[in-house]
Amino acid sequence: MTNWEAGSTSEQANAWAVVRASLKEQAGARLFDQWLKPMELVEDGDPDTVRLSLPSAFMTNWVRSHYADRLSFEFQQLLPAVNSVVVETRAPRAPTVALTAESPALADIPLSAELAAAMPSPVAVRAMAGITIERPTLDPKLTFDRFVVDQSNRVAFNASRLLAEPGVPRFSPLFLHSGTGQGKTHLMHSIGHAYLAAVPDAAVLCMSAERFMFDFVASMRARDTYAFKARLRSSDLLLIDDLQFIAGKDATQEEFFHTINEIVGMGKRLVISADRSPQSLDGVEPRIIGRLGAGLVADIKAPDLALRRAILVRKAAELPGVPIPAEVLDLIAARIHFSIRELEGALNRVAAYAQLTGERVDLEFAVQTLGDVLRGTQRRVTIDDIQKLVTQHFDLKPLDMVSARRSRVVARPRQIAMYLSKRLTTRSLPEIGRKFGGRDHSTVIHAVRKIEELRDQDREIDNAVRVLMRELEA
Image 1: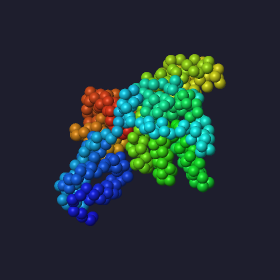
Image 2: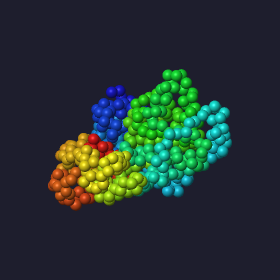
Image 3: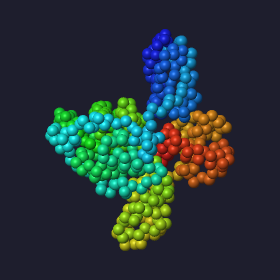
Image 4: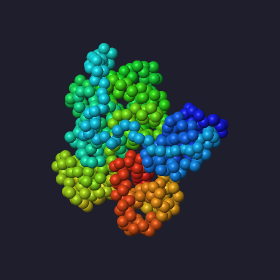
């Protein structure tokens, strides 16, 4: 490597670019993207100390434990005058998930009211440009009054209601993220219905990110990108679903960035959804992630048993002439855990089979009808499977799962593994404790409660648990 004399922050920035490239090559893409990619250089003018920051204390502790010596060595090879490398947790840049839709803080977000007042009406703008906007294809069943609300989705629901109100939007964009089939699309269609009900002349566009890409590519081939751009930019409410599908599509991302920049810059409404948080969207440009994170980010967690049961009760009441006993609703709610879409599909299947056969719905009928569905939810995940995946995810040794080490970088992943063992296996608490080095059942209870608490407070922990659960259930 080439040595530089330390003495300016620009030299530290140059060195950091070389160090990052070296770390990526040594660690591999998966480990780098998970732990090292979010690290940023903090330039404070001190030539003796290099400061690096990460978005969460959990990530900071992990990097300190695994890479402190490597970082010091790499920087001192490039900048001999550097005495120390400090890894720290940076302060949150903007209130995102921590904001609730009921919070008065939402109303205090500064808005460009002067710009909005000076602009001609959306209808006049479209008429002057010769643009016609077709009515969006919205599912009539996906409305706010048919969305079952509880703690897992309350922030997303309230934020969606606020964005659908007429007048100057209180925030934009709104970014919704959750696993598949947990209500993102329902909320997006609900926003479209409610906004059109309040502003009938509004131009509302609803499309998937994949459709955005196809339409953009088609406009380039037809050499008519102006019409494509004008159509999107003239919308008053733009709804784009499944953003993860444009990952790695550079030309599409370029146009997408300019589109969302203009939509937000003109004070219009933008709603985007994805299956993960903005910071977890691999292959999406940092400037897009930064733009999305500047609005309101709201996640929807997997529905718990009470919510699954409430959804089934609501849906069962809407089924014409097919009474569904409570014990059947309990069976479906208990056995289908993560997707509301699959939950509703199972209920509809039972009702349809009952209508086609003329049989009465009872527990035996439901088990026979849903045999393959219920068997599919019973994939046997073992504690060994969980421990192996957790150690790989956090770059630990298998012995760390059963060792007496209590440092956070080991203890927190161990608690996550205990939490997943309780959630995904049928093992008792004492059995789980024995698999983790002979620990007492009270230790397992503490671990489960701690991770449940952290999932509500720490986005990194919640994302890690989601990723691990998806891999275990695949």
